[in-house]
Image (cartoon, rainbow, N blue to C red):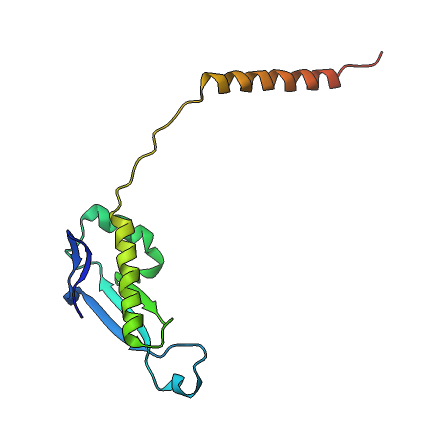
Length: 140
């Protein structure tokens, strides 16, 4: 297996990735019980040096359901009928996760309502109050 290039500045070494294969589930005829076409890709997040700590935090948050107790990120794919295509699909999933994790988090700037919006809100409140006041008048 070769290194996984995410960006020109980020590469996951092939030595940190472990691939294994298993039998896929679902229909497949007579051949399904003989061929291990499901690909499982594991990456030990506890020993990797490929990511910055902030990127690692975002990756752990993004993939929290795919990280086991030992700290391994486990991705599996069984959509294709060939091992090589399933393995490549796993690598693409990992690439997508890492691209999402390296995006900088842009903090939200708090905004204030415009003067016109505040004025319309107050007018609406006054109209609602008048409507309620007119309902409660007695008919003496």
